Image 1 (cartoon, rainbow, N blue to C red):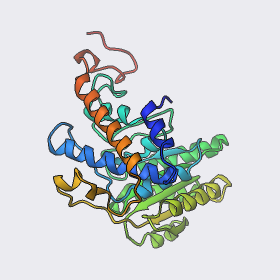
Image 2: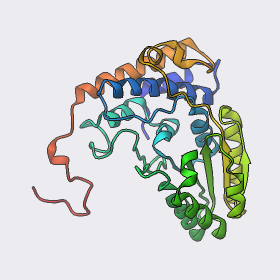
Image 3: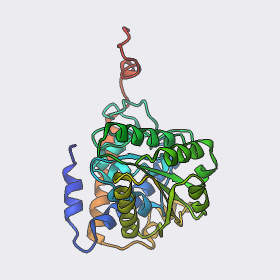
Length: 294
């Protein structure tokens, strides 16, 4: 996958923050800008992840390169952690003619096959059975692949969650479930014969460590794990706070790195606005197996 040169400079440009912390800071800054773009109707929607970045980043970094990530819409940032440049994501959010999806997918519903990122679903929890199915298929084929599914606490009340947990527990699918939110999911895991664990969802290093342990357990044939990662999401920020340093409260800081990321974001917004929408002729591209004649 191609990386933007500016992103490469950003990752290497700060030694005061760990790689994981740089990812967290980048997602926070980008989510704040995307929220403002949504409020000013520049983009159609955005599912802010402010305050929940550590779970997203830690889970992706805890996975191995060959493992597939199945995010919900609020975990849109997984692609950024796996190398998708900010500029590419911004084209997707605006639905421009340059976007990989050709405007077919709304903001935050991004899939990147090369980065092993599955598409999110508009139905809460619908991606969990898909993650289990992919894990089971890998097990049948004897591929050394695990899947990591990320979701919020509200999803644990859906039928898809229970279907996924039941199937994973019975067939010992190599799948790791990572639940954001301060809810007691241990009992639900035990009911399906799924191992459970809990970690501070605000500690990116701790999340990375426990997800890697769960992945290694799954890969060794011991079955799935359900991880509860309580977070403290921030949802009541006004426009002034989103546009100021206040949005970075509680995060480790590096002013030089922050400036680089903000410049990357500003350049990405300008490029997306200049690119314009896709040509109407692309409406049916990548929709049907055989191209429809116009």
